[in-house]
Image 1 (cartoon, rainbow, N blue to C red):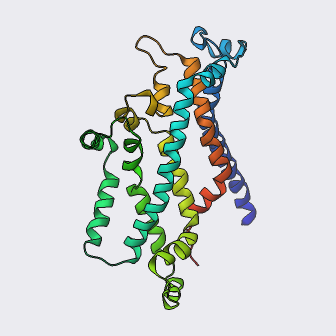
Image 2 (image 1 turned 60 degrees about the vertical axis):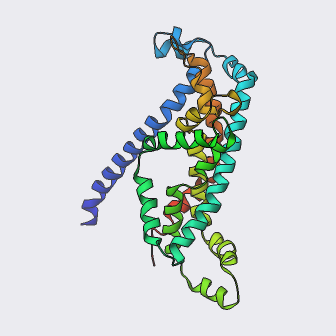
Image 3 (image 1 turned 30 degrees about the horizontal axis):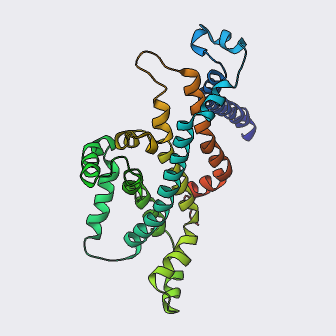
Length: 279
């Protein structure tokens, strides 16, 4: 009987590999297309993919983007906002998730229900309330509007809370018997145990803020505070689109994301699969 099922198993494996290969091609092709367009001075002048592929290549679009003073400012702004917001999410979401998972206080269920409620709301529904708050506080065209509203996210709170709830309490109880306070337990015991999920949260938060366009566009009018996605949008004019420089800028902006995932991809997989198997 096993011999009869062997060809079926091989056929199933073959089709699975074909499906994975097609999926990989579908995901990689847009990146290759972006790279190809960015390497031509006037890509819109070519009427077919073959003509674009056979045309001479040039790095002038990348040189123009890197030599642009505004592009450098946008890039640095995105780095600053991404690092501060990511750090804030790791610290504050860990603290909030620990409180919701381990502490008992009045209104705990209401707080957690509100976190889930905000998590289920589309981001577009928060545009007008947030814009009114930023205007009343005088935070338009300031770093505060780009950083403070995003230092704690409902997704990060939910993620850390669910992870901490699955951790054993024996170590915490032993630390309390030895006289450790809640802050020491949180940062010396819980935080190291949460390292896989905190890594996932940090990478996710950085990527979301790095690619964020809507709120930085709403909250900034001065070029001094614009982030990279907002700056790239200015390559799109009312009559035409500067595809070469736009794709070059997008290629440069994608490098930190690709490097980040290349360095921490094992941690990301470890964090996503943590707790999936139970003994």
